[in-house]
Image (cartoon, rainbow, N blue to C red):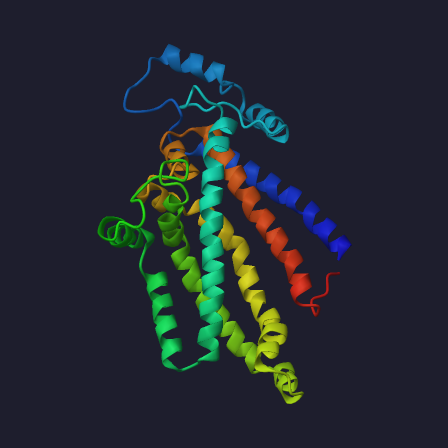
Length: 309
């Protein structure tokens, strides 16, 4: 197991190298540039800006210089937000998205597993049909619809929660509830359906029938035998889901005016802010590969049948 973890960790290095390399050249070859816009700048001004940001050098020199800076943890200056570096912009906004995404995923995981287990144990009964109908709504209805509906119901009608804002404002932690529910709702639906299907499959397995034949209580059978095997598909889903819930928070951040990284990411793409785009791509990619790495490790503890060679 230790050798597998080391090899798996070392494999992250070439993965990130390929991501950084492809992203760097794809962004550079895309039409437009950081200094192009509706207002056409004089040629001399553009040349001065190109020289200032070392963009007058050959492409391979720009790449090697940028790669060296990234290895030192320096993502460089922002082309549009001239008063801030990329590190500062990401450092200010990314923790907000992490907090929102973590709370949303925790809600989705706890509620999804609870609904999935209950639905599987009550298969083909009204509880099962109600839960799965609710899950279908979560999958079908987009977040830009769910968010305003929750605002209308819980903020404007009932006055229980604030309409917009963040936990740093007067509302405090109450401002986190609606955006977290909105962001986690579709993931809750997927986890509920996934866990239900997995639990039903495990319930029909031979070792569960053997456990019941030994006279074990239903609670012991579920907690010790069923859930451990049924959680494997859910664990596989959590890795990409966490990365997706962070990168997909743009709509929620816009609806609830959350100062996360989503708005900066969109603006950087529209402005062709090369360094800011690259910095965000690297951070998102690190998050994704790190979560997949953790999923691979958790797999071994959940299912001893899996051998790492």
